[in-house]
Length: 329
Image 1 (cartoon, rainbow, N blue to C red):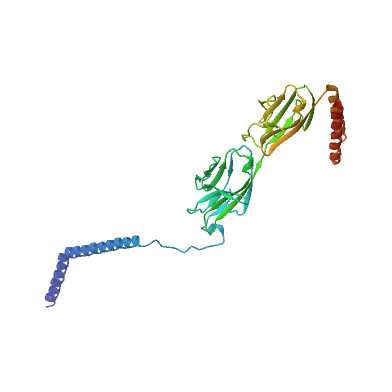
Image 2 (image 1 turned 90 degrees about the horizontal axis):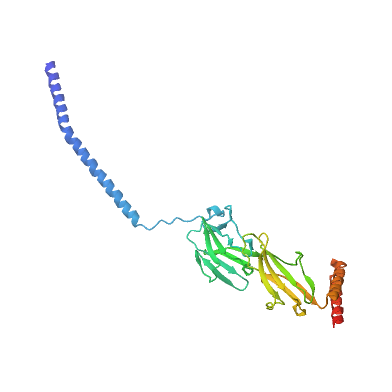
């Protein structure tokens, strides 16, 4: 009887295993279908979530303001080393050269940079962004990567000195002030022996030859040839002026009078611009001997003059000149 019981149990176990094996493929297919359906639902939900996020307005994160420039998202000015700068800067420009005024703006963030020229009574807009807003073509913007909005000034003139402001249109505006001075060239009037002159005496009928020598303040300056004038007026027609090549970077303009007359006496000026001028006083006197005597007397008086007796020397020279003119008459 025991053997029949174990035989019945064995048959039941075998039947159960057979049923499980027979139903496994169908159960597996059901699980796969459920997994595919669930994956499809997840994908659809993600797609719907992306569409919802895309329709939302941009997220606004409050900006934290700090005292340190690095964490301040407002534009600020810096130097060539990347250090923040405030206040003003001083720049010296060479007359006749092409100059650049630096304005390095960090964290510009879409703001505009403009250059202005300012005086106590007025201010004029020079540039805005990359656009020039002044009729003077010598002014322009020469942007230097990555953040230098340079103001370029070509052919610097003496009147270009003054105050220039680089400004960013924040609220309130941020400004960098640049004080500009213009360095004028060295200018001298010399004689045939290359001696610098302030006064010179000639007899009537003699030839007068003077040279005006201009040396620019820097080698790349394009300085125009100097202009001669007599008593602040245009030279008479009988006075010849011509240019010659000087040594190094010098510009030389010579003045020549073939036969000097008393009317050729006066103040002769040589100038490159309104503020770069030097002068010499020419005295034309009658008679070779008398002129030589007067010239010697003037030299003797000048040799005895000291720095503390300037007025006395001038008075003494005027006395000699008055006495000689009275004698000639």
